[in-house]
Structure formats: structure tokens, C-alpha cells
Image (cartoon, rainbow, N blue to C red; front, side, top):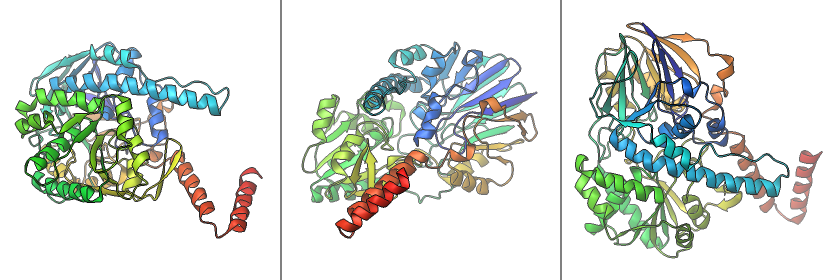
Length: 521
């Protein structure tokens, strides 16, 4: 027997995870995630699926993060009628994430259409990918599965979930299509994670699909205590500067982990005791899930206590968030999104980036083309919601919060899965990360592009199949690059800076004249 693998996402980019498997009697997806990052990449979320959702038998979900689960409501909306199998914790977190995503999409589309009506008469209105009701309908399809439990989600298919150590409920999924054994890694956690045990998995596979987010990095070992010491130093510095300490954070897992560290540091007297503002309704809801599952987590009781601390204030209403963005003096704000490309953190950044007393601490991966990546790379000016903002705040980053294994950890995890008789497919990484991990693994490595197809036989290398032209949605090489929206923003910033810093009024007038001539002819 052989299986056909279709790679519909996270191919030479980090987001949009979606693997489709076809075998006699079985047609299933592993994950159905949103694309995140540059606008051109996010536009793929609106394009037709390169398959018929109604033809699928089941979805097997590795974990709740939006780049793995975010398009499930659209899948159900467009005809999928099977079950979505996931761990109980993943289902609880999706019950927070997916309706929130529907609300955000409806809200952002309303604002975009309003802005378009003012600027561009006659432009066709944009529709949200899905709304909260669609998310609720998708949640009805979820079915819980325990770690280590074999299930039969489709004819001729057995599957079981292994703890991936990445986040609450995260999994690698082992599949047996007759005599073909395939493992989809999901996202693999680091060896020294704070809340979860080391990732696990079976041995002896035909084919392995492995994430590679940090495949080119060899991070120094950073223990939770070392990470907390680094955070303490930054908090003390922010207090001395008497400005805002902004922590852009993913609402699920990262926000809770940062709260744990801040509360522990305050209890020990290592940092000033102050209010921690969690400015994310989604993180507030997710925190309740983490509190319910704390008993099964490392440092779980300390996490539960931190989430119930009187130092933690949940900012729920939008008006309270806007008021907080104008707050003066030293204060701590944890707000989504983690890559600064959506959510309430944008309002805080608009209000604070110009302030030399402010500090922005990045605690997670910043995808190419996102506002977070631009700040991480030292951009002197950025554009947020059409406004140009000078960056005078201190921008820094803390290592040790990542929920992903680095290159050596991934290589060790892959080595523990051997023997692997077929191929090792590297997904969920930007090109440099994939190349870095490929160099560590040697032969057998496959680097699939978007919408590529592969035959996966038992006991033999995979075979590339031609991809139908009607499913090619985007130039595969453009996926991980900043797009024209990024280039336009950089151009506008450059023009503004050149005009502002012209030597004198005559030079400024001459420059404007040349620009008009170049643009208008």
C-alpha cells in the first residue's frame, strides 16, 4: 500500500499547517491552520481550499494554536461533516480560541469595509472568513482522544496521540494506513520546558513529517531560573525608567507562563510588586483552562496560584484597554498578539513606541513581515494602522520562553524515532531554518513546497507527484519573504524621513517635485 500526502500549508513558512492524506478508504487532514504574517500570505486564508471539505472523513488535530486549528470553522462551514479528533485540553482551548477568532474577523472586516468606503468608492466589500456561529458549529464536531489511545477515524486507518511537550494538550500523531506508518510531529517542545514533560513519540516509521521552526538555531540552555533572572533585570530597568513595560504575548500558554514568572519574582522580592495587566480577554478565558489542568503540569500548583494572584488584573472591556494605553508611569501590560500584528497590543504600541521611557519585551517567535519582526530587527520607524510611529522605546527579547525545540533538540527527537525507512519531511519553518535542520539530519530529507504531492510507500523513499495546476495558490518561493505591503510601508517611511530631513526648504521642495515627477509622470 502507499499513501498520498498533500502539503497544503506550513511549507517553507511557519504558519498554515495543513497536511492531507489519501489512502484506500481514508481521506483525512492533520491540522487546518491559519496563515499568519505578511498580508499576501494571510490572503491564502480567504482562497478556496485546494480540496473538497465534504470529501474528508476526519480531521486529526495536533494542538489548539491558530496556525494549526484556525481554519476549522471555515472547513465545517464549507461542507466538512466528519469528526475532529483532539485531546481534551486542546478541545477546551479551541472553545476559547475559535469563537474569539470569529469575533476578531467580523470586527476587523467591519473596520476595513468602513475604511474602504471612505477611501475607495465602489470597492467590493470584504467578507469575514467565518464568524462566531461558524466556530460554535465547528466545536460540535470535536471528539476527545486520550494520549496513547488507538482510534480508527477512517476506514483502514489507526491513529494515536503522543505528548509533544509544546503546550497544554499538544500532540504528535501516529498514523497507520495498513502497512504504512506515518508520524506528524505537530510542534515539538524544548527539553527544558517549564510546564510540560519532554516530547515523546514512537520508533520505527516509514515517513516522518517534522516541524523546523528553530531548526537552524542552537540556543544556549536557558533554565527557567535563568529566564526569570533575565526578566527580573528588565522589570527593574523598566521601573527605573518609570515607563510602560509592554509584553506582546500569545494568549495561550505564553501569557500564562509570563504571569507565573512575574508573580514568583514579586513573591521573592526580586522585582517591585505591582499590578500585572493582562489585556487580552482570550488570555483570560484560556487561563481558566490552564487552572483546571494545572494538576497535570510541571509547576502546575505554582501556575494555578499565580493565575489567582491579586497582582493580576484582567482587562476585559475595550474602554478599559484604551484607558490603560494612556496610563503614565511604570506599569506592566501583557497583551496579544504575540507577533504584534493584531489585537490590543497595537494600541499600546501606538501609544508607547515613541516614548524613550517605555520598554517592549518580545517573548516569542516573530514571523517574517510581522510588526514584531520589524521591531526585533531594529526598525527606526513603523506603520501601525496607517500611522507612522517613531521607535524610541527600548526593544528587547528574552530567550527561554519558546515552546519550540531548537535544532539540536529536534535532531535528537528525530533520531529517537528511527529507524525511518522512507522520508523525513521538514515543514513549519522558514527556508533558513529548514536548511539548518536538514544539514543536521543528513539524507532522507524532503523539503516540500506549498500544495506539493508525495507518494509515501511502505519501507521505501517517497516519490514526488505532479501537483495539479488548479491547486497552485501562490509562488512557493514567495511564502517566507516580506511582501509588497511591507515594501510599500518601507517606501512610505523612507519618503517621510527624506522629506523631513531635507537640508532646507528649497531642498525639500526639489525632492517633492522629483517624487511627483517620478510617480505622476
